[in-house]
Image (cartoon, rainbow, N blue to C red; front, side, top):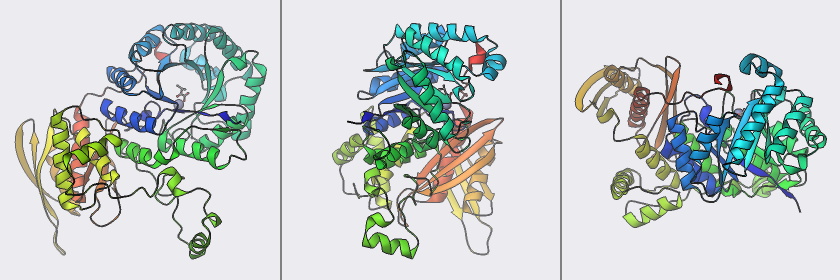
Length: 514
Ligand code: KIV
Ligand code: ZN
């Protein structure tokens, strides 16, 4: 019987630390429900002490999720642990994850603490967390650059204090697979009470080795991997959940463990995270990239037609590809619409919200005859990004684009309840439209990224546009979807402009703030 490998997803916490990937509470709940359908074991929903927004998001996820454990992050400080305990009160199953840095450079320069003091903080934090839940995880931050002897001491002490999971983070992505795996093996062997806890790893991808390091740790006894959908996360990201899970499943002959995930939910989850955060998935990304199962060369195509296994090691259907089936059309009624939305994990908070979304669905179905799950997901993303208190709304957009003529756009926006119109010329229809909008909203931000993705295939497909704006170090992503990409672009720009006008709630405190 193989061991179980616990999958701890941190898309909503570390993933959200990617610049511009911040999510609203509702978006976090939608992703959490998708993760629950994927059957991940633990969902790290946020860092409750970081901001009121984070606290409320963790609280809402805790209330909405029944089948996965919901976890909140906390520095090794009483006030953080208490905030996490409070936010997780509603959870069916909860975990507090507390951390403190253990590398010489972090202890000396960031914490300005002696190693003995760090051990005291860690033990105290674990004991306090145990007052809220018997499921407590401890992480020695920057373990990848910490001394093994010191790790052994602090980890032994926190197990005695009641930690049930010991997570070894390669915080700065410095480790390499053989060495990292052997560190995990050594810790398990050297710590006298190591059998009382599960060893976990949390690898960052700065050298592109996060998945390899995580898998090497699994080969050496780790039985929890922390990862994110699409490898989202601080800087170069975290180990990608889909790659870790499919490696373990595909190479059963090598890995002595298995996960409980329903891998057929992977692609839907990946698309949802990409559309909510505005981080497109590169086409050649393993498992979830659009080309991951596409064969271009004639020799490969011929081989696959004769026998799939000649060039494919996994079945596309096993990770949720090819579910691109028509689910609804313009004759579908409100009940069919509502029940498909429920299957996709969307609960409407009120009749008005259902009616508004159904109305938009009908508008879309008039333009596009076959509506796929991906279209419904985009519809929900659009409704959820447009809150009622948005300052700027698109009223109309007219574009003139003709060969040999300079494209012109006329846009009318409602800004603070007043309708105003502006015209602009540009290099193309999109450029002219965004210039006209900017002349009204005056963000004065830098456009860092503009990308268009087809939500489904076909020329009548909806285009989903992501616009990333940066102003004074703050980065926001705007999203818009429409069968007309000029309109989708305008919606995305307006969405980003609205986000820039909201107060920035995402200042994440650091341990050095102690
Ligand atoms: O990378 C890291 O060290 C973390 C910890 C909080 C686990 O994200
Ligand atoms: Zn991290």
